[in-house]
Length: 506
Image (cartoon, rainbow, N blue to C red):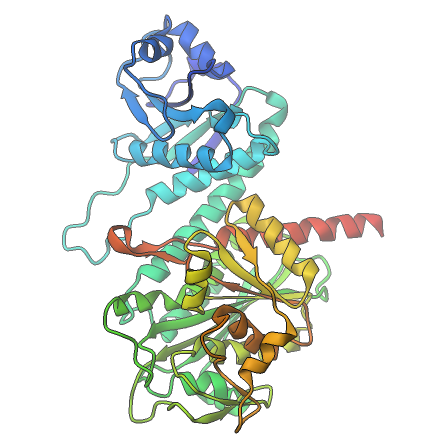
């Protein structure tokens, strides 16, 4: 989407539609008051007569706007002023763009950057505005015989009251477009069926991103022969029952001025379909196991956002991709496998396969001598029981890293919750026959899964994000959410800011 930033009087803005935020039972915002004055109190009269209820998320299109440069007004309710915080702001944005994209309009203007939000500046509001617009434009209908027409909206103008904020708002909008595009890329990868989005397909996506990056990104694909030679027995064990070959996908982005600067590494679980293997899942809802590559999809989405933003960082993105199927060659409960690290694992449940691909990817990451490593995975149903569908589970061997991720989640409004990773949980993984088991029983399932991964993350600051509850929606709104691309991208942008401060101090 194209965007621009203008500081002109909103009453004179020439646009097909002007999006106007309105509080319930409160004074009009300054920009909205200018519109009201120029239109002979059109907005105030609609409110006074009860023709528009400014409850949060309510929208109303006013098809004629006498005295104004715009052809239409789209009124958006913000609810009560004292209750308008981040969640209300974002809900109002989503409602506005959901209504807007249903109209045959190719351009619009919006005045949301003037909405007062404690602790949030114009750049943040601009970023979230463009993210919301990009999300609203998203359609996944390539498998429909008669796909619905694409939204007409192509251009969005941000109307700003304070000219001093214009540059910061423009930068916020630029970042928002990039993150929104990354979120939508993640959604597409997640929504694709398992017979299309295979480990090889993901590898092709990495090669496409690299070839179109003008040298900013490189991609290295390790096939099964290379993985066998490497000794990645754990990753390979997961895909043994599938006709689809497994892959380890490695993408590198060199953006720091110092080529030797330690990279930050993101690792995604890429189980492109998860039947559970020999420990077969129930049939009900198994179609949603195409979303089990949500961690990998979020890594790809973050790559796309990074290529749009171009931060001055060195980054490595790793995707461990496999399909978990039952077959005569499949790994069985009770089998013992050898990991890339050399540790042996007794596989007590083949449906706990995500940790088996991630552990080899974590060991592989050691060669990059990383500044930090974050893995992202739809790892445990226990995380959904504990945190529901609002918060991503966070566990880490480094408190500073955990705090950085929590802060990034708050900034991006893509939030996580910190769970303990105490040594007392580790004994649940004891095995009579191998170095460790791949499950630790029902108690604290999310924590023991992270405990398993921690055994392979002892050479760098590491964090694990369990996105089982946040990567997709079920039911009528079934589909990938694109999370946690916002959190991950913000985390990397924060690392860039930290590096700039360190370089200026040295």
